Amino acid sequence: MTTSFVDKVKGFLMAPTRAFQDSRADTLSEAFRYYFVLLVIFSILYAIVSAAVGMAALTAIIEQLAMSGAIGEALAGVLENFSGFVVAVSLFFVYLLFLLMLFGVFLEGFMYHVFVLLLGGEKGFIATLKTVMYASTPWLLLGWIPYISAIGALWSLILLILGIKETQEMTLGSALLVILVPLVLVLILVLLGAAVIAALVAGFVEMMPFLA
Image (cartoon, rainbow, N blue to C red; front, side, top):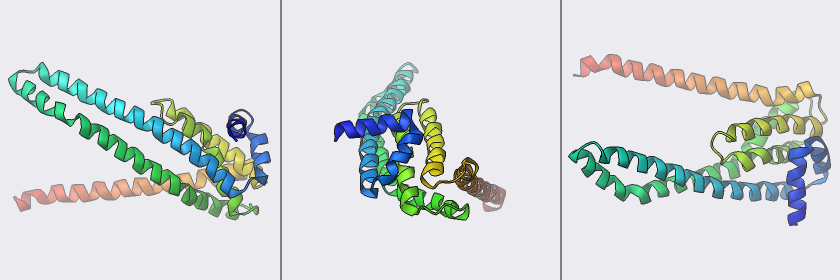
């Protein structure tokens, strides 16, 4: 089983087109188990890095406060007691991310499959969902590394396009649209949400003189 798993990882990293072609016979259960194993590995490594970065930031703040006089030293002494809190918060958010990715992959698959249908893909939702799971390979392997995670995200996006092309037997242009259109729609939603929040904050700021 380990050899099969490692070979599958190598396939999606080194020869994705062939790997997606071979994955057509995989069951959804097999694809989800593969995704789950990578997600657990990612979550453990990300938890370690997140806790280490949090502790490093706390230590830097404490050192700066300790050199800023008597009040700073007192605050530094207080902050030293928050090391456990920083680690706990880091682990909490990593676990929350784990749950979001564990269940969110199904929502992501559904979102992309809507556009697969619109653009003529006829191989079914399961094929799309398996593709999303397998295409996550680079992100789950690299996403826990600061800065390098961007490469993993871009790599996974490219794999997703290639995977949709192969598993849904679509043209490269159609597969590209399947991925880019929902991403653009989500970006528009985020921008509109930010505009609404900004307008709301501006409204409250304008009201402050009347409330004072």
